[in-house]
Length: 122
Image (cartoon, rainbow, N blue to C red):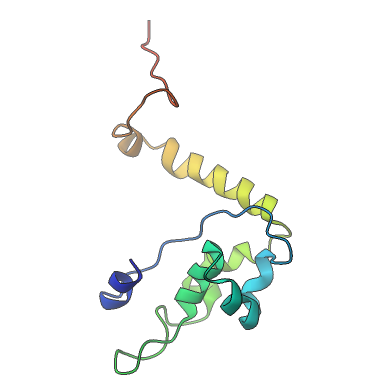
């Protein structure tokens, strides 16, 4: 996926919620050492590191997205201002419900089954 994004300059998607991760806080993205050390283990740190990464030599200039993180990836940046992963998780669930589960064009193609049983209207 990352290769496709860099080859075709596709915009990376937003972040996915995380739950309690000890010393790593949502604001850790502003510490380059924590970002570098945690990007292999945590999806949020990986997403931010990918957006901030330098392009390989000879393949363009700058980063995947050019500009300050607050301008190019506002959701990733806004997450860094939250006090805890619990708040991040709650916000991501609310966003998923609003942006995916409540959208008919998406949900009409969603398979139902034991987890989301279909109740025929009377």
